[in-house]
Amino acid sequence: MAFEQTWRWFGPRDPYSLEEVRQTGATGIVTALHQIPTGEVWPLDEILRRKDMIESAGMTWSVAESIPVHDDIKKRTGRCRTYLENYKTSVANLGKAGIDTVCYHFMPVLDWVRTDLRFLFRDGSVTTRYEADALAAFDLFLLKRPGAENDYPDARRDAACRYFEGLGEAGQGRLARTVLLGFPGSGDAYTLQGLRSALETYESVGDAELRENLSAFLKEVVPVAEESGVLMAIHPDDPPWPLLGLPRVVSNQRDLEHLLGAYDSPSNGMTFCTGSLGASPGNDLAHMADRFAQRIHFIHLRNVTVSRTADFVEDNHLEGDVDMFGVMKTLLLEQRRRLNEGERSGRMPLRPDHGHLMIPDKDRKDVYPGYSLFGRMRGLAELRGLEMGISRSLGF
Image 1 (cartoon, rainbow, N blue to C red):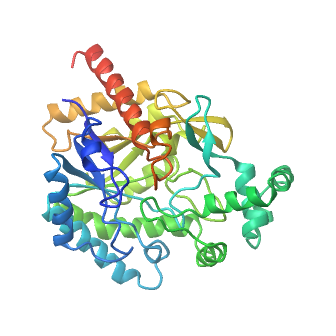
Image 2: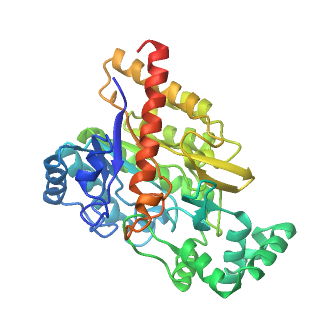
């Protein structure tokens, strides 16, 4: 049995049609009801409407990515109780509709952070990049976050100052727009003041508090997921380290061990994202895939080249610093174990995570960074070939 090959699709407003997606070879769709405001219930009829749309195009709705977790839940403030109940209702409704996997994250304020969304790759394609000096320049000189200077050593502050001075007015605007970009699929973005205000609400929330709040979330939501036949799959932090004064609690092996132990259930699992975890040189991904194999419910495969600590560029799927062969082999062995033991989660949905913007897509409008058609299709084809080669070598 092969992994279920899936594709992230942002719904009817996605620049690519389901008919185009089907021709990539993907059979499963990963999507969300982006039109529902964060914190509100996903109604069963809306879920069924989206499911019918996907099935009418000849595919299946494989994973809900994602039901966003409202920041009041992450802080346990404001309307936390209401949003928790709404979240549990949404999970139950997905279960009723036969959608059995939910990918979600617990990152405060920002879903991901890059400092360059149009980095020219060596082959002429366009990819994304993160530079620590650029992020520090944004924090210190554009956002002007109170106390930010205390979060950087002297060498980093000096480098950030030089970086900022070399940008010019146009470059400063591009950097601000890049970091402020909102959640994929929404088209929304923060303003500088909006981000400052959001960060202020986390002033009393550090790693310990956020970890405790995540545990509380799991203890409420996972029992509902169990009853509904749904697997919860938390996505790692992207990038996997603290930034802008915000805590990070899903960044490394110790973090994952803590959250999986916070509520011991097969329904409490993870999305194994090789790009997010791979951005940290301290994460041994082949080892982590083996360590957490039984709790991996969803797979995001992408590669990164880490030029130095806290700097990375998104590379081609089979290039870069991630041991994609080792990760894929471990996951295939885990799938075989599940099939042999009759576990229902044997299909193991996988999607090519991100892809370079290539020539055939360059004039397509509204393509979200990392979510081009041809770049992801190349990635899916490469991963499909790697999977077949490893499977044959193992005698599967």
